[in-house]
Length: 102
Image (cartoon, rainbow, N blue to C red; front, side, top):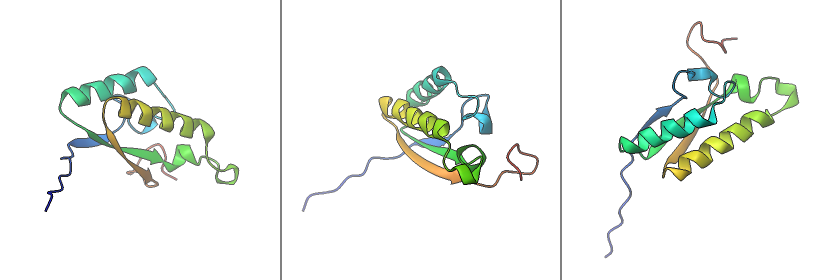
């Protein structure tokens, strides 16, 4: 019988260095690229990326924020360039006092 081997996942939850929950609003493609390059050098291959409800659906009746999706797609493309798998997670609750607290 053949053995089935899964790759070992090594990673982190990711938000742009210095921007935290504002990473989608204050998009910095060069920083995202540097971050993934540095994470790859540290031996990581997986990142959880949060899709913050307050930016992706800022106005619910208008639907999905197209700018947010374009930035997310670019982030995933950069991650894949560096060999990363992505775990995307919607995040609709923020800690007390955070910018998206409703």
